[in-house]
Length: 139
Image 1 (tube, helix red, strand yellow):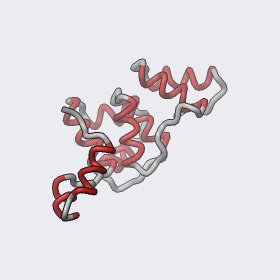
Image 2 (cartoon, helix red, strand yellow; image 1 turned 90 degrees about the horizontal axis):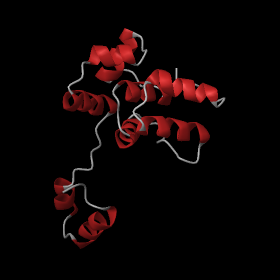
Image 3 (tube, helix red, strand yellow; image 1 turned 180 degrees about the vertical axis):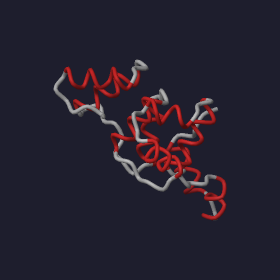
């Protein structure tokens, strides 16, 4: 069925007689980055140690991200996204959960990253493309 549209949720919110009922039905709690990454690991059948290694992260720092004890930079989240082969939507959710800005098509660097995410590129390939266009690499 998919997620309801914002307009549908707004109509439901404005027509409800109790905010408690609405919030109970639509728990707006967003998962933390660590919670979201663990959920994705389970859904995709991935091992945390392999993702950390493929993301070129220090083992300790990578585990701290997955445990929620360290807050990674936007680029570290992107490294994880490429290591997990996340979609653009999943990547943007991870960025938001991590307190970073979503990828933006009008930003040249972000456009290259979006293109590479959509094509299922590796972390190495996106870095090659960023370098080729004179943009800062992810790692």
